[in-house]
Image 1: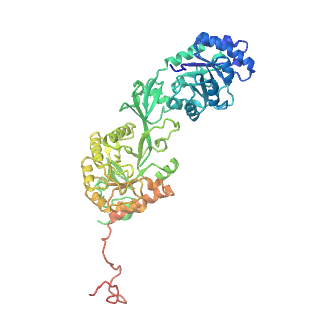
Image 2 (image 1 turned 135 degrees about the horizontal axis):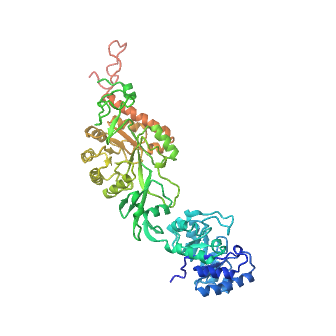
Image 3 (image 1 turned 90 degrees about the horizontal axis):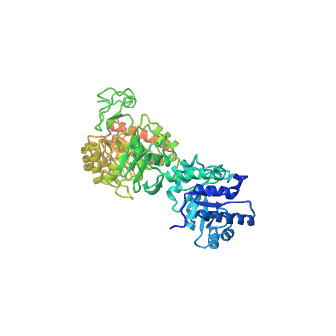
Length: 275
Length: 303
């Protein structure tokens, strides 16, 4: 088994639930189906952070899900976390790997395909892809939009999770763009009912169908169920394109009922300048 | 029949077209400013310039060049949508849809099967059934594969396409293509994009003379002079892309080519003088003030 298998990634954000304890909120999230948890706290001093880490370690063990600490690899080791998540500006990957050893998880935040592929090359166990939408968790960071999600779906081969401003109202868009894992912070921990938000997101992820197809000559993992959804997933709705599935041209009016299945070869073509 | 050059340019009935097309001389329906109109694939055209749309510095320049060229038929290629690029790079979004006839090509095909597949994709876009068969057999010269081109032409004609094959300038092959049902035959002057001009004017002249479908010289032209030559050799039209798109000023070159095509066409209709080995004075012999010394020309004129 790969050391990582998750669908719904929940990150702590205590500023979103004043008056409720970290333990309460995260327990509810875990009840709702969070299957990986990250402690993220940029303000707490190390002793306090270690205490929180130990708390979450205990809690996540109860539910049998991995526990990740944002940055602080030494502290992560001390709290017996499963791994560390680092940003583009944090401690270098190789340094963290050296500290953690080969078996622990290292995740990296990425904001472009270039960064994603670099993280993949470096040996990251998963990457964060985002922020998909503007987010209060990381104010000032420009949203990468769904375009980067689409690129990740086409090119990233290690587990990747879409993150940033995702909530139950926009999660389907992200899944339609090719995401198979979602991460949320404020939508979950800032909710009155974290468990039900988690259940909702989890079920959206699980009901999103998936197929491995060859699209325009490249292997492509898609959540789209039909050719029409595939066209939309790639941002091509309304464009004058022609679609061919397994060598047969599919007229536009037939896209909606052309079901995608793994192994299918799809070509989407259009006209470009030529003599 | 006397040719009135002004009539040919502005309208009225010129001499019968000698390219196998019907023109407007008999039906009288094509209007006053279509004096030298011609017909290909069931369409009556007034311009004899087909413009390719590739390699222009920008869509805006391409559009201006299109306007300057007066072309009524434009070509383009079928390619995979670039899924990493969200911006629409399709050529069609830039084009004024009315009044243009679209001639998609099958470039990128290296055999008849691939060309037929591309042709079907092109037709499915709903822009008509014209197709320029283009099957390259060699990456360095991009010269057309004659056998596959003929096969693809036969198959596409049977499927109801209006087929205009780009072909090598072989008179016999061109005849086979016409017999296979090609609506026009498009021999290359030289390999695509080379600008070498018409490498075998003799063949091109033969092709233009013998076919009963329009001959459109496609590929390899470099400048206006090549367009003039193509038309003087009897071509019905010229297809150009690179010489316009990659010219210093594509818009000016589009106009130059359009004028050259018209000039060449007029010269063809006007009937050029025969080529002679020696001079033939343009003034009368009688009344000359002086005479040449008997051997002045050193050519033994009197011996």
